[in-house]
Length: 176
Image: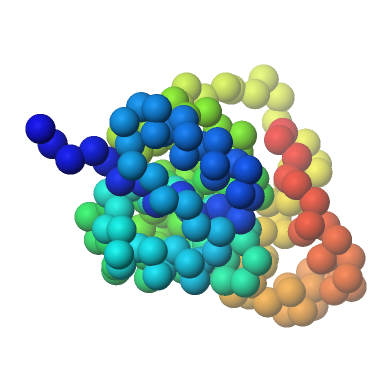
C-alpha cells in the first residue's frame, strides 16, 4: 500500500490552516502546519512533504522569497501557491521560481487538490473587462515586483507617497 501524501501547509492564518489540515486529514492525507517561512524551512527537512501549499503574504519572509529554498529542500514535492493577494506579476514570478500552480483565496479543498494534480479549476469568464481598481492593483504589483519588493523604490517609480502605496498594498485586491 502506497504511503499517503504528506502536505506541508504554510500560512500565517492558523484557523485556515487547521481547517484545511482537518479536511485533508479526513481524505487520508498527513498534514503539518507552519505559520512562517522560517518554520516551513525547518519542518520541510524533517517532514519530507510530497505536497506544499504556500501563502505569499506572511509576516517576516514572504512566500515568494522562501519558495526557492523550499524547492531545493523538497525538489520532488508539488508546490501550489495560494494567496488572498493575487496579481499577475506574483503569479508569473511564483511559476518562474518553481510553483506547480497559483490559486487565489478563497479556494475549496477540491480546487486545491485539482491544482496539485496539475489541473485548473473551471474558470469563470468575466463578461466585462477588469475594473479600474483591479488594473491599478495589477500595475502596483508589477512595479513592486520590478523593484524586488522595495516599497520606497516602487513609490518613487510610481510618483506617489510611500505611505499611500503602503495603504493601497494592505487592501485586498478587487476581484474584477
